[in-house]
Image (cartoon, rainbow, N blue to C red; front, side, top):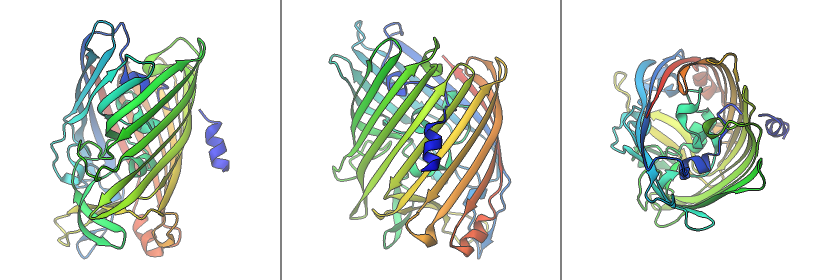
Length: 421
């Protein structure tokens, strides 16, 4: 509770913005058709130790994503091309299309090449007092998952967001009670779903506003398929925002309080399991300082990492593990801040903590990461980011697991972001 209070008294690392409205609607002054995109080239050096037992690699955390094959990589982490705009003169019909051609969990999860290059395809109808968005797009939820990645100086998602919120879909190869193992059946969920969303921002006065959203989704990530036998996922979101300055858009100077909740069922083999996620947070940006805090909870369908299933030392075959039982619990939080030292240089720092499988002592894991670095901006959002993460992992009651987690090492990352229009 003390940590939660501390978070709610903190402020935002990311660029404070109303992502609900930015991603779902177009301004009257926007062009009818706007072609845009961005590329992120990422270098990663993982200093963890690689440890194998009888040819089985037990240290996936010491290898780099998305394919877990090397400790030092240089890849196009994201290469996205999008088109957005409006389909009528009165700006009553907006659309949003985005594609992905980089190397990440969307196109190449665990080295299983996917061809899911379409991440967003939606139309927003603005004829009524409430906006109606239909298609595939980012669901209302966590600030970290919702924000546009090309504006963030933090290169990697927190462990909390990556494991609790970034959903994995598997082709099941084995099941032991409610623990399921399998190779990726599709791209990671990418904080997206297909369905219909009702949302709106209500201006209370010139400085204060209230935003809300409800989405009825398939719970299928980027698949656009009825993979859960018509069991929907419900998403709720509410936010209060107070404007603090004149800057708007991605860099809105504001104080924002928000909360979200999502619940649905997931089908594994012939069984259905509840997947519940919820969180609260706060963001703040005053022109120089950004600080953010968010606390998230989860129950059921807990992702518990990758596992090597091939005993040949020279060949690692990775599969995802999911602890599906409805009673399985996890939670965590992050606190982060950035400060503009000069008009081009930004100092950054973030701490995140994630507690997984809290209800089963033998499987309980705790991850603690501290990230420091800087961001150098060439112009607007084009920049180079440097992140260094001090990573620690613990198995509180499992000494065998702890001996493996002791191989966790620090990670250095450098990323070039180039936004084009």
